[in-house]
Length: 339
Image (cartoon, rainbow, N blue to C red; front, side, top):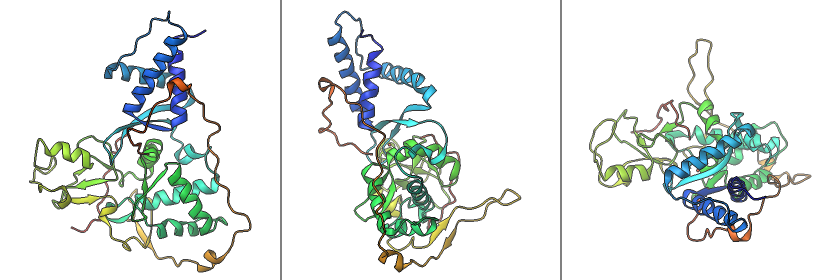
């Protein structure tokens, strides 16, 4: 027997099959779910509404249903496109375990090591080179080779956990920020910067060039703000007309070769103070590159079979490119940027 509750069920099936989707696609999917249920039982009195308050109420009801499973249909603004993105994520703060069903313990440990180097990258670069990412294999107490690590890195990018730029640098994707933000906030409180406009985490954007000013903004937030005001919202200094003249946050903040030293997270001392992040010089073991693994590490399997939405509910996603999306952080990073 078809009921109005099936709208929610069909919507979640569509979300499961897509992983991450924009607000526009989520609304189209929601509307298709209404149409499918009404076609199955025309006597049902249900009507679709494209009002934002109705959408927010629908999302809130979904999260109430998912609460017992420690899941949440969470949204976040994509840092590079400015689009509102949604994904079904693990709401339980069990650190990196959100990926446990996708990857092996060794691969999770490797991902965690790469994330640490991204978060601790100098000059608020929030990215690492391929060399630095592959070098993290040496910090693991495993027999994973760099050849295998390269395959796993490709999997992280393919599955939307990491972004890889044209420069070959790895950074955190929107999906990673959505899933792992509680872990990032608790593990790297001083490195989690907050946009002064939207109060969401910033790993790609701009910084005020005034010395000691803590203002950080996403590019899209900065452009919108500049239409109304040409002064910094924190220090009130005049900003240049061209955003490219501002101090970058993200991979544009670092030059190739500047992040060769390995950085480790500061450890708390007995009096509660923390030591500065330290660079470690590590010699790459060329023998590891030459060593051929006896058994190639297999690609991780996905979270089971994806549930398929009926064909009359398929959403055309060709008209808008999807990008792989935050609880705001209270901590401020001690800037290592050279002014």
